[in-house]
Image (cartoon, rainbow over the protein chains, first blue to last red):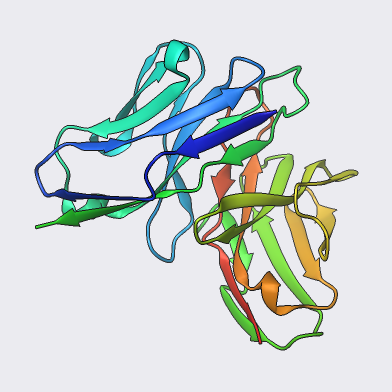
Length: 117
Length: 113
């Protein structure tokens, strides 16, 4: 079985300050992990993915995430927030090949990021 | 044009009505998915299809049915809508290769009165 917990339902930052969105996962296999972003009235856009090639993953729009197996975490960070980063963010785990969850995504509950001027 | 297109984008209907949500894709992907999104719950999988002849229930399939009319088309039906099916519905596709992400449509906002 696999699961994802996003530790904060809301995060509020000032423009130009760092962003940290926290995610812990549980998986029977070494997982694939993703971060998606959802802007209002839009679908989900892929920010970045981890597939075991490197533990520090760089994504679009200056976001990055670090896979820490010992902590079962995959936190999303950005050095300097921009107003356009305001959105809802989802941490997602995908079952690996050979597992019963292969090809299926399990979503966290979402974190709403607010950016103040 | 969007790679994954959902119609309608918005729908308001009454309890007991039959509703169909449609999804079409131009990505050439074999795999298609239907999710519903509720505030604070993330997205939950309703049904998924790994090819035209393969349909599988997700975690919350009760009250829903699907049809995979072609590789590019996957529709979701509510045979007799009820108010707790009010939600935002997303269609997604993937190419089936290991570790590849899913690609999402812009969603259908469904309200059942």
